[in-house]
Amino acid sequence: QLQLVESGGGLVQPGGSLRLSCAASGVSLDYYAIGWFRQAPGKERELVSCITRGGDIPKYADSVKGRFTISRDNAKNTAYLQMNSLKPEDTAVYYCTADRAPPYVCYVSPGLYDYWGQGTQVTVSS
Image (cartoon, rainbow, N blue to C red; front, side, top):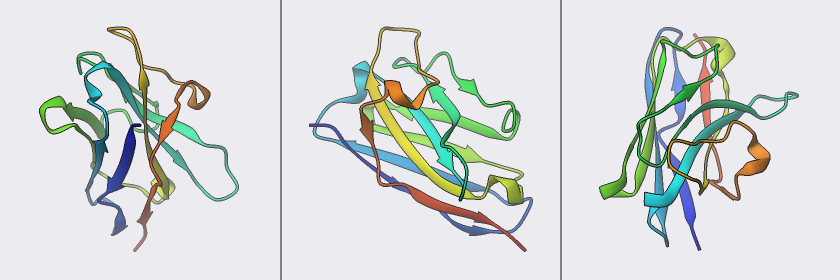
């Protein structure tokens, strides 16, 4: 059974950076696409970014393009989300998710992912 654990969240000032990590256990991530979603209070869960199992075709929400970078290290069974130039509107609980996928595919809908981490809070405030 695949288990995902996020870390790296916290409080940061506007313009600052954070790096989220998603450590997987129980199963190799080699055949899994990975997604990062976020959910702010009173809002629906939304895609931040996703990456194919080979790490070669990332997708980003328009709101984070140019500021966030998704990556993965299959040898370490870990995925990352580097977040730069953070804004107050980035404040949310961030979730790592994964599901088996064909090559060159990652899913933008949360309903297509079966495995979720517990989430990590990111707060951007001065």
